Image 1 (cartoon, one colour):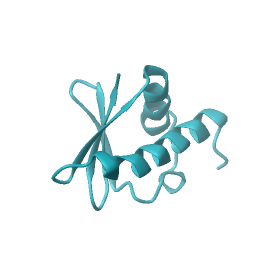
Image 2: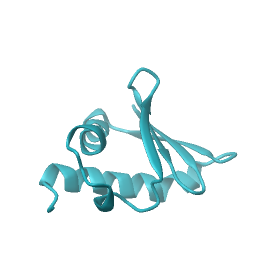
Image 3: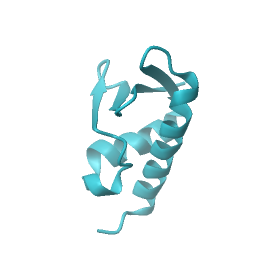
Length: 86
């Protein structure tokens, strides 16, 4: 499957989150903030568009919505990352 432009943007945002998170991590956790628009692109990519797992960055082991669907939690081998809107 070829990803749509929207999915490509979401995957790109996820890669940026993964590269930035280690710089702000403390005790195995990191908070990363995205604009509202970028957060929704990531949420669409993960939860609405049925993006195949093989298109997502391989570091992501698990992902879910938390805090009443306001936070995207990404689990990697090294970190748990909370992606929030600012």
